[in-house]
Length: 391
Image (cartoon, rainbow, N blue to C red):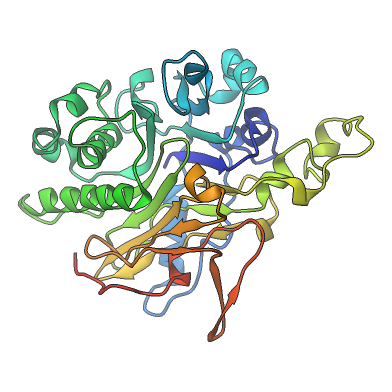
C-alpha cells in the first residue's frame, strides 16, 4: 500500500523538511520501513493469526514508485490572480531520498496545509500517476485500491463532467475517484471556490456509493475496496478510512493534534534532535502552548511516541468499514468566533448529524465535558442526530 501525510493548521506553518524528512520515521523513511502501533487488536470471531497475516501482507512491499507533495501558498493572491491560497505541486518518479530537487524544495518551503504521498504502483510508473492530484485550488490523494477498476472505468468516466474528465492526466484508479468526487462537489466545475465541510462530505460519500454501485453490476463476486482518501482546499481538510469488508481492516490511518509541536524545530523536544544536529542557538525556544491549532493525518505515525497518535478506527456497519475525519476548524469565518464544525458518517447511507459548537465535547463515561486546547473530534464522540442509513 502507498503512504501519505497531511497537515493543516490555523496559524502555524510547517517546514516541509521538519514533517517529511527530518523525523526518524518521516514519510521519506516509510518507503521501506513501517511503524503501525495499535493496528492489531483482538476481536471476537476473527483469528488473531489471520489478522496478523493480513497486516503483514498489506505492508510487505516498498513504496518506491514515486513521490508527490502539495503545499499551499499565497503567491497567486499576492499578485492579484487568485483569492485565497493555491497548491504548489512537485512530483517525481524517484523515491524521495534519491531526489535532490525534492530535498531542496522541502528545506526551503513551509505552509499551513501540506499533503505528501509515496507510491506503491499498481499501474504505470509516471509522474502523471503520482498523488496528490489538483483540481483548481483543491487537492486529493488516496491509499488503497478500487477493485475491478478497469471494468468500471468507462462507466465511472461517463458520470464525470467533461472538465473533470479532461483534468485527468494519468491512468490510476485514484485520479478517476478524484475526478468523480470533484464532479459531485462542483457540478459547474468551479474548483476555484471553497465548499463547506457538509458539501465536501456529501460529495465524498456519493463518490464511494457510486463506486460500490458500479461494482454491483459486475457478474460474480467482487473483492473489497480500500479507500483511504484525503482532500483539502487549503482551509478545510477531509479524510476517510474505508474498506467494505465484514472483518478486514482498511489500510492504517492515524491522526494527531500534538505531534506538530514535537516535529517543529522552533519548539524544544524534537525526538530525533540528538541523532542529527545541535539544538538551535536561540536561548528561549518557543513554548508548546504557542503552537497553533493543527491536525496531522497520516498512514503511519511520524514520531515514535505512541501517545501522540490515535488510530482512526473503522466504523463497521452492514459490512462497510468507514471512518471520516472532517476538519473545518481553520476557516476564517469560524476562527474569529472560536467556532468549529465537526462531521462524521457511518457509511454510504445517511450521515451523522453535523453540529456547530463553540467548543467540541469530549466524552468521559456517561458525561460530556468541555474541552480546551488544540483538538480534533472523531465521529464516535459526536451525538447521533440522524438515522443511520443502509448502504
